Length: 251
Image (cartoon, rainbow, N blue to C red; front, side, top):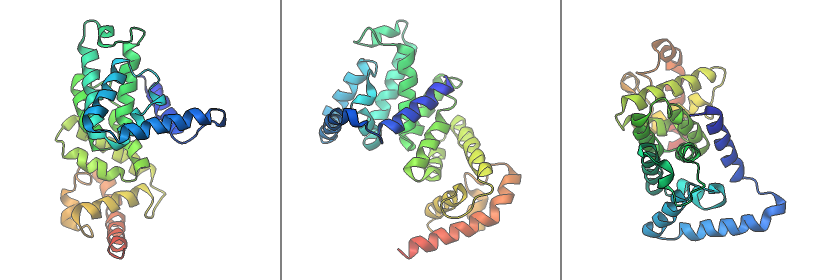
């Protein structure tokens, strides 16, 4: 997968959902109205809508309600995206997978995969696990992209913990690589909103209390990252975890 393409797709998606050009305000309002209407529909109607967009090859996907459904109904939508990706990749005639014969099958696969990652949740990791089994090289960066998107959703390490529960070694090693990158890159930062602070807060949430030495020894992240990195973070993470638990207890 072209990593520059995926990065651009994610950036375009974030911009498209937060910035509306004043010259197209009326169009944006209509778009939002469509998204809200579809969001109120039942599962069958939402699934039918997604199927129609997938069969069109995700043409103009950023102009419809797919984004809203991805964020609000990921358990419904993401498996559909993954299944369509599989259909296209396994087909001897990929264009036959689409009703729109101008669709670009390779563009579709990249766009659909990027859309899965953009959800930034456990469901995205579940679908990524399936894609890695099909082509681990092509979809190598989807775990990292999913967890980067999870930062914008608020609890990336909580998503990482849930990812380990899937039980896929290929997924696990990519989660660990992401965690190491985040924690090493955050070496000069501290406090509740740093990546270390976010990990500590997720750890406190996971163990329903200030994390202990026993928790640390068996923690899916602490026990998998490089021993030297784990040792350098040990004291600070346990302290930040205790502080995070105290903050939550006072709410």
